[in-house]
Image (cartoon, rainbow, N blue to C red; front, side, top):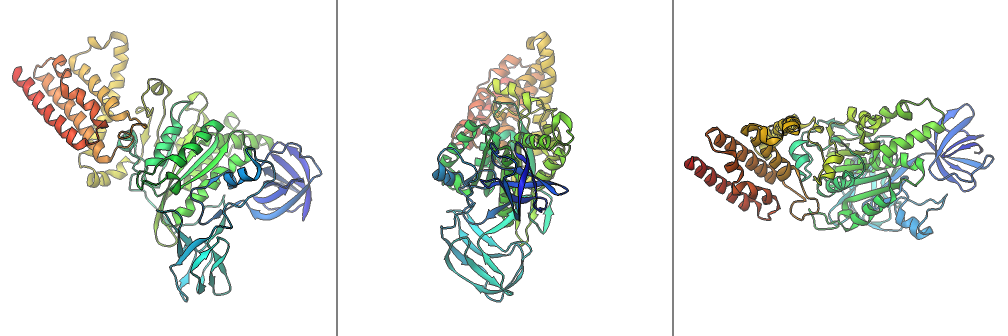
Length: 577
């Protein structure tokens, strides 16, 4: 049934003469632009169009497809670069050059490529939604598990083996239900799981300030807000590269074109440190730049989380980076204003908090329908205007997420990277990991971590006095506190993402480095109490050697040498006194 356009307001088009349901996909205008029904008023439907509506006018035809906005899930997702509605950008480039024309559609999965399908069930087996019926080697190190779509069940009557395209039948169930290697899923509907579990394992990132002070759980949620130039994108790239997950989904949501171009150029060249293969072999990129249609930006986040859920259902750990949710919220604000809805704070729609919650709630550690365990860790970057953390997107995000990594422009200006402010950041997962740290790192770990945070807080209090009277006017024990805090900041928290050794720091290395700095502080305090002048303590060679040890390839050997040297130097100080 066809209708026609009644009214056009930017990406929001009102259509009449066609019966629709909420979230139906419709083809709008003579060029068949893709849109989605977001409101129904009597006989009229309100559609958000995922493409530029310049030149579209009332009276042009509208056709309802009767389908929801869905993504194609199957072999071939990894290594792909999509736009916000899952059109492969390399394919669009070959079709039309550097600029995407309107009304062009493309399948999310290649229909010509054949995949080697190996069945894991046999004739007569009973399967249900989420069951694994076979496997495909998607990339060298990732096995793609072919799942029965949720809601489908039956007995296997025929199962094939060999090379097939994603839309060819590989399994037939009783009742004639045919299964292919591909399934479609509506992006706004979370994929079902058997049970959600409490996160109990940290996501190891190799970044000392994150793993050491403010850890995030596998299956947890984190926000990384910060102003322009504070290092959000580099931090997210470090997380994508080093976090111990199986699959990475990176959503560039409304970022500047040059930033997104950097990501698209760099990611294919990054080497996966676990396998030595290209990182893209376990990555899906969704690129939606700020000059692309605003409605597609709103959809890109749902596209990304649905792909992440699909790999979670196979039993994989997935990390999803959304850069940035602020641009997503701005897209919602623009569409809301076109709909003439009552604005909330700073013009954002009143349902901003609900939409953010829906997105972050799709993270989690779960028992899948097939009986495996999988997880999605969602890390959302937020770009508050002017670095103002009191604005609505940041505040509403903070209500939902359990980890807050606050980027600080002043730290970035001082060239302290990662520029995460240790006084404003927090993690609500630390107590849940006590047992894990005690078993896998050291029983001392939690005390060392708490002592480090307390030391940095004492430094912040003393800095206020220093600004008034200068550090020389402080008692010697307070001067020592400032010096040990400086060592903690520069030796432990600072990390060079571009240094081949320092870019990644294991938990064992973090523990030994933190223990060495804490041990130096304790011994220095004891030396001061016994009458050793502070200038003698601060002149020790082992203190300066600690600054360089994190760059050593043979770290354990180097730290053992410095610890022995420290023992010897403090012993001589006590004897000389």
